[in-house]
Image (cartoon, rainbow, N blue to C red; front, side, top):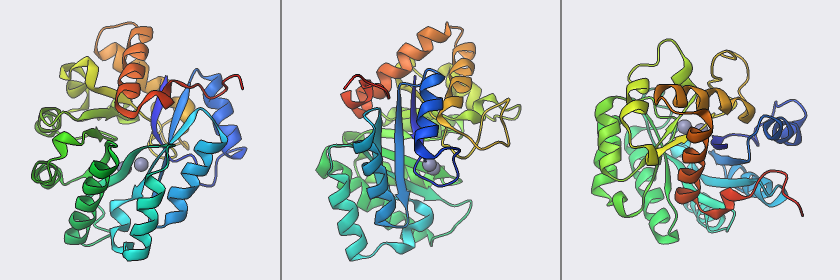
Length: 265
Ligand SMILES: [Zn+2]
Ligand SMILES: [Zn+2]
């Protein structure tokens, strides 16, 4: 199974990144997509370095909407250069976060548009972060022609309407551990009605650990709990849900994702 969104280069994991990947492999995780998206180029470059060091790791690079205010010419030039690396399978996470409002909304929108333009030029899909900004996120994706770029709404926990809008644009929906919570909003219904070939799974580690680990530091090894819940909601065997979500991730992000964490050299 593939964790399509994890911040594994952040500090604070037991045993560092080797510990994280070892535990993930032990739990049956074959590949982890490392997110290199904060307010600095070092975060993007760090995710790429991890992807170069471990065959079962790929990277997504960009500037998080929280940090959109940090973008200037030199920073954006480094993000563009980093994102062109072959280890980078998507551009982001980008989008709009009107829950925390850590950057001015107009600045978030402008930086979001830049990521869409970059993804289009690189021929890579987008990784979208959206919180309390569904209508604005869809409006920008439509206006910028993101249908031709493609991508995923990561950590999907939005409304049925937002799910419909994103699916209509050809986007994938990535299911987080929230689906295992008692209060999961529309997410279980979204998992049930979405086409099987548009669902991904993720942890968004170190955040949002699924049940029964809720409140603990999240890690890619816990993505199995999300997979089990997706299988239960769709009334399919866990192995089938695993095969389908693995195939979806590999179709969206490329064949790098078919290489397992501990591949023979
Ligand atoms: Zn996010
Ligand atoms: Zn994230």
